Length: 228
Image 1 (cartoon, one colour):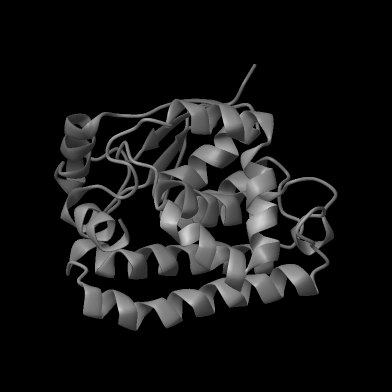
Image 2 (spheres, rainbow, N blue to C red; image 1 turned 30 degrees about the vertical axis):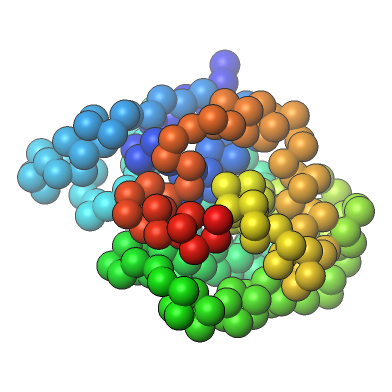
């Protein structure tokens, strides 16, 4: 019997794809709310929430009746449960990096919108993030054509996390692929290979024509205006 979950998150790629990639890869089944359902769930009074949290994502492991919130905690829970942790400390570091990068590329989750000046000032930092992950990938033996993070012999949580971060970004914001190719070719090769894993590829196909395309809202529109 497949593991069953409820994933409480907005119907957008962004942070949700980190969790979806793992659930798809391990063959789990899960349900998700639509926008109105998610808004109603998030805005319940604290005493009426099934689990105390401030914002999504929230995961409910229905078989074990365990609730977890916060992306890094959810990912590590799934990694432990499904034996996907080749190096727990370094994997957690990559997941936290991903959270930071998503926060930055949306200017604090839409606290401010992008304009040309702000984007040009941010680009060196985005390049630095790419370079950091490139160095990690190279130093831990991954190449553009083969291998997985931290010496694993199959895709693990670290690889799925990097793919959910970088492949989702270059898939949804395709003008950034050239930047990743220059700054982190090993990472680009790795995340492209993870995106072709059958379970992940099937998930991506379900989202191919989704709208919103990346992070939703005004911040998504400002990103597209700058990049397109």
